Image (tube, rainbow, N blue to C red; front, side, top):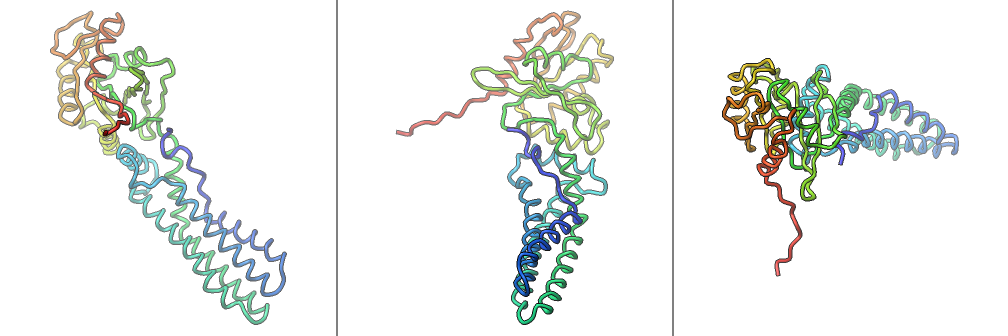
Length: 329
């Protein structure tokens, strides 16, 4: 499956909803005369307004049923990308307001439809009053529609990460061999996409073992520096990744060729061990140059030494088992 925000339709503006409702109503009114024509116009306008606003709401997934990974990530993305927005709670409020406006359009129809008796002139005046009130209702949620639209635009660019797949997160300072490892052990169709709140790209690769597909995720810009250097949005994104990880590989380069002393690399490793509930394995890469660090596994990506062994260890740490249907009898 793709991510839950990928297929969200374009959100109409308040002006677009009003224009569509009243132009359709005008056409409907031409098909009938007198009171019936006015009633038909009112019914059409009400249906268009109510349905279009309701569609905005129902197009969104139920936030309460989403995987926590997506909730936290969406919250971070909306907060960082939509000016003046308060994250996922603001989106909930916008959707609630638009839902209210959808119901209100139906209420206006019910209120006026029964009063359209007597002569056609009176019916026309009542219909115009109803139209004015409907337009006011839609304009009242103009900012809500704009907020929903901005959130939708930001979330459509999410990387295709799947919380339902067993996931190995690859962490460590830059230039320690993370992306080389992911590229080597996964298929050649690795996806790269940007988090909407960083300039760096997330890398996602897949490997299949015993008919189980494992997802390897490298998150440059997030898990490659100390927490103190992350801003609030990036820290929240790390919280999202915590929900995702079934195992974490922390790469070290004891040779120092990566440009970071081994001491700071180990500090990052310790911080990640403290933060993640999932198993955290210490992987000393570039072991062909030096093994002068304590680690769970040693390898050299460039030499192809023990790369499969590290992958096997990660898969074992995940401990994922396919749930098979079984018979109690």
